[in-house]
Structure formats: C-alpha cells, structure tokens
Image (cartoon, rainbow, N blue to C red; front, side, top):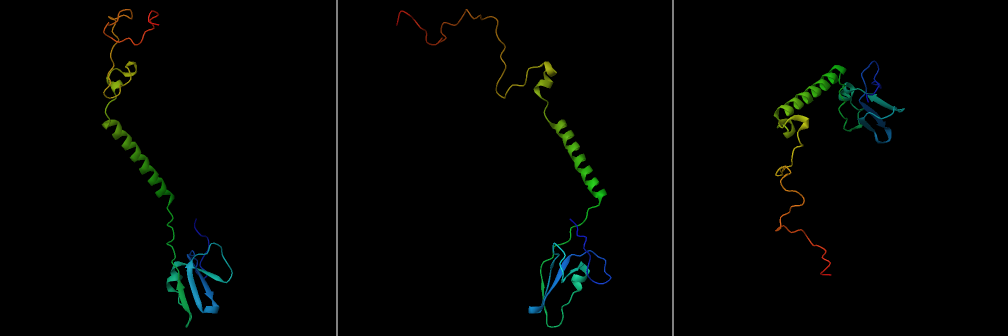
Length: 150
C-alpha cells in the first residue's frame, strides 16, 4: 500500500520514504525506513532529501537500510500482462491439441467405440462356439462336493 504522507521539508510535496529521528541524549540522528504511523518529533523525508541530509556538527548519523519504494504499475500495464498470459494459455492449449496423440476411441469410431484398453491388455471377443454346458475335461474345475467320499 502506498503512503499518502509527504516530505516534512518546507515546500516539498514529494512522497515520504524515510523517517528522521533525533536522539538528543546521544547526539545521534537516525535515518531509517518510513515509520508505520506518523509520530510527533520525527520527520518524514522524501528520497531526494534523504540523499542530501547532513547532521549537525559533532552529531553521528545512523543510516538504516531504506527499502526501495514499490513501483506503481499502471492499469494499462496490468491489462496487457493479463492479456499476454491469456494468449499464452490459448496458444499452449492449441499446441497440446495438435501434438497430442489421438485417442483410441476417436480412431475407432467416436462415442460408440469401446473405451481405450490399458497398455498390454486386449479385448477378446466372447466366443459363441463354446457353450456353458461344454467344458474342457482337462481344465481344472476346482473342488467338488462328492457325497460318496464324505
């Protein structure tokens, strides 16, 4: 969120970026990031006046790191960025559709075709030649309950 506070220097209307505090007991001037709330007995300075500031003779200056002010992005730039992202998504979707292998269902006749099988598995048609009554005698049918053996 941008600060609405202005530089405390007489006649300057630039936005404030730093706070200047005098510590009289230590003869020290502290120049640091803009305070969250305006306070009495401190001074808000713009970037121009922060760079040109000098302390009184015999005073020490403590300069704390002042973060770069965030650049305000114009509304047109935001719209242009959103449009570029949208166009990239559309282009990527079209490329994927063009490069993706065609699905088995599409190749075999559309919606009426059976679903694609898993790799390595094949659909085997049911044979009408073998009925449920006929069975292979060599085929193991599993355990049977034989009343004579019990």
